[in-house]
Length: 299
Image (cartoon, rainbow, N blue to C red):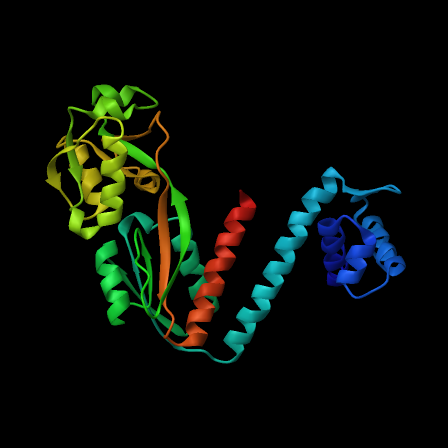
């Protein structure tokens, strides 16, 4: 299939007007109409409903629009990635992450980056958000996946994922039988949480969520890593509240339950130094965007 036809169709589908789309593409309307008709004939489906007053996408056209955008975006990323690889880019990239990010998209990013740029040495470091922020500032880490980040010179960041909050309970806990939990049901429970100074923003988010519903957690045990917190809950030392991604640990002896109340969004950020090797940084960010876009396309 001619890539130009995809570009023509996207222009018409976004404008829903052949003349405006033609102007956008710097061409005249008749050949644009012919190209769209040829595309429909090639696909064997009608993509657009045309009348004297309006142009509308058919259900098939709406699906093809998203697929066409994905194809062109992937093509552009592939060209850039190939060009970077062809220039023989090499070097060293230090990536830090909070333990709750050690799965899902981050693993896909690392896998994709390793496949396309095997010549770049990767060093992975598990760190808390506070440790990562300091390491990013002093240059010992190039890219971080963390729960909180403050704007600073030579640092850029974007929201990498949005999660919710889940309660984690011992498997035999009476509340474990409930598919949804009210925050107030945890009022008298002992809590296992991470130290406030290692994640002030996320710690505050949990505490404010609880206090809004009249719960003031009695923290009987602290642990730095989420997996350790889950293990301590399994040992019946208390309950906890964790990002929803932690449920992917699938640790026996505990259950994860969403809340009845609307829980605040829990962002996971990707942050990086802007003064590092531009080629390596560009390669990594391209890979990250490709993986995130593919995940969004899958729904």
